[in-house]
Image 1 (cartoon, rainbow, N blue to C red):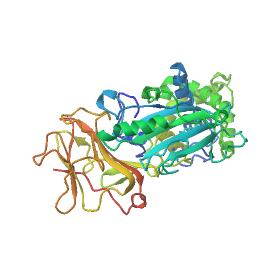
Image 2: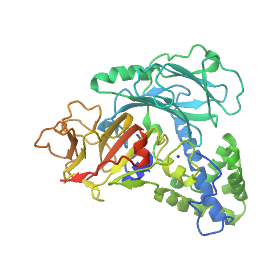
Image 3: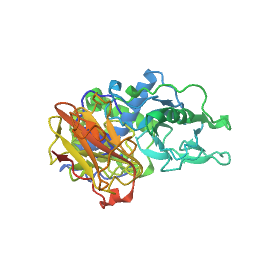
Image 4: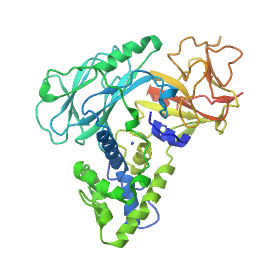
Amino acid sequence: MFEKKGVSRRKFMALAGATAGVSALPFASSTRAASPDDPSTIAEDAYIWGFPLVLVQRYWEIGREKQISINRFTGKQHLSRPSDKIVGPNIDTLYGYSWLDLTKEPQLLYVPDTNDRYYSIQLLDEYANTFAYVGRRATGTKEGVFAIIAPNWNGKLPEGVQRIYSPTNLGIAFTRTLVQGDSDLSAAQAIQRQYALSPLSSYPNVHASGDLADADLSLFPILQLDKQLGVEFFDVLSTGLAAAPPPNEDGPSVDRFAKLGIAPGAKPSRTQDPAIVSALRDSVPVAADRIRKADFSTNVNGWSTNYKVTNFIKDPLLRAAVNQYGPATHIAQEALYFGAKSNGQSLSGENKYVLKFPAGQLPPVDAFWSLTIYGQNFFLVENRINRYSIGDRTAGLVYGSDGSLEIQVQAEPPASGISNWLPSPPSGAFQLILRTYQPRPALFNGNYKIPALQKV
């Protein structure tokens, strides 16, 4: 759901969660052969550790330049379509977001009763940690009021208001609201319009007021911080450390970074020590390359996913690798995304493919699943029937006499009809992503395996 004109399959899988937490990990999974006290090693580790913090700061900077509204939800009023030119969107939910500023007082988050409709409001801090969810999986679908509280706030809350602690004063909330089908769009829009944020001092006035502004997803581009900032990355990181102090368990890492002048409010790129400046400057492309090449995916039957995306990931390299393509990757318990190959080969519009689920073997989920097709760069591609995904809400699917479900992925309509047809681009490479929302334990423990995509 991010704007970018070129993204590889592996990059998108990191973005989507098919490949994110701050902690005092000693960089065991990313340490080079050099001594941990070597300036270059410290600088590289600082870049990787601080990447999400700098990324979120840059998003806030973009937002301020565009005069964003603070503590107020925006929302898309339609499902994603090719004309949106967004990378890797789902065709299942309405997207929305709000920038969070808890500096003055807590913000009250109001959600309506969605009558068991899937929705999620994902709350991220300044380190891009998902620190909480409000939604069907985490809190249910009844009406509720939640107080999002800054680290140093110690006041009392009204009775019945549930407390959510944010690790930092600033953050971002991302909303997703399920649409069951074309006839359900207006009902989903009505739910989305009711999400509301209001200051604690306004209680009990917690309901949304006025129209819902359009969600501008261009505020979250895929950034290349190494090329955009260079050695000044470490100055921005130091500014972030002053505004958003890390948790105590990260003290040893932060103390280590301070050896190079990376400290709250400092300007390490301006140090008079040429050796340190050289180490900082040279580390940027090396660390950025390590992030881009990181691969934490698991592959089964030609489908790759990442089971390691949690609220607070301990591995800085994993956290950076996920967040480099944008914020708001779902934790694995909320959604698992699987990317397909066929017999180890990338998918091509010149070929025909079949995905067959045996009877009783549809993806085990408590919310929904969908199979979405994209062009090579993960843009939606126009097709003659305007169908970009097939899932458990697709009307008119035809099941076999044995109860199985076959999905035909090909450029031309199948001879058997279009009921189970997912149109692929007429030529060139394309991408196929299976989304599973609220996946059941069988998807985590390996008891359930997605059938291999077969070339026919």
